[in-house]
Image (tube, each protein chain N blue to C red):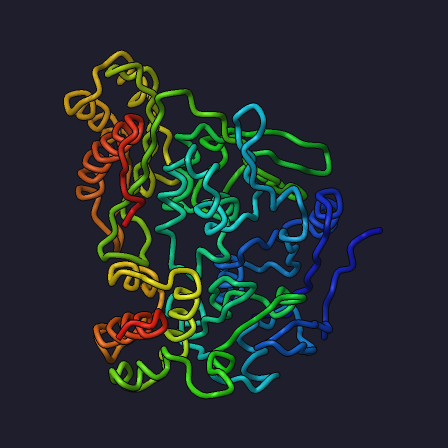
Length: 295
Length: 165
């Protein structure tokens, strides 16, 4: 790795001032499982690592008094599935945290880092979208919030400008009768990047779907929020006929590419199948049934 | 007070295998590089150097991590256990004994990583199922054994540590 410098600020304001001073040369370092490897392999020319893990705002993980939750940008995957109160409200995100990389990767890698890496196949991004998460951003000109579905702008690109950092994510309280699920297809059993991933969150009123959000990953330059697929479910009876309507919309929304992990045709097919399965899992959880987390 | 931006050689104090340890490291150096090249702890191996193979795994503050994906300066104040710290004063750890008994290694390059990963699992879950062992160890790659002997050795060590068998 080329020579770098390292700073461990303890406040957001200090981190912002370092980022503002060093511009695109500086980058926040959370778990490092993407960033360290990318700099080592000369995929990024970062020269200043700004450690996120000494800033309390970025390490916060809490379910708040109003039922919403705050997830600091540098909180590692294992902390999420180790937190019962948080996990109970956001099972789709737990699904993703348990299938990213390996146990060792999950010991360091953060959800905020996964979002800021902005890979089209980032496993935590569809769950954040279906949970309705909002990114809390700090910068030299003050703070702003961006819905997660609007955060990524292209492969490895996002709305963060020079001098800005992701502080935390706010996840709204799920309504009563809600459930969610995320799953992905990979050519092997584990330790791979999604060929397609799909997340769904539903709210049931009896057997009727009162609200639904669907997001698919690895089928477009950014993870996709397929709003129409969720809207088409509202008022429908939860069941296979409804899931098929939404799955067709998700398949039509997918604009994948051919690459070493799969073909356009297979990814379109998977967009349909995984949306159905994500909905089945989300509805089962909304009804209080156990659905395994990924494996 | 503005945060200092560190470059060149940085002084780091950490605890490694129970002993307070000081070293100098440039920010670009990984924990793996410092363990092997500065501290002479060559048990952790560099396989892929990108977080895929698990040969460099260590336990840091109670969590299994890939030491190639941790900067040495990030280990400031941390408590690190490497393969060199697994055996006790009276002899090998049960995992090490069972790896020998089951011939759970051939070339041996992946073995330190498997042992550290398996120890981290048994610290958290003393009674894992075969499925749990296979998932936990999914981040450790072995090109010799086909994994079955490793999984059997880990299950047998777990049973032995629980006082069964």
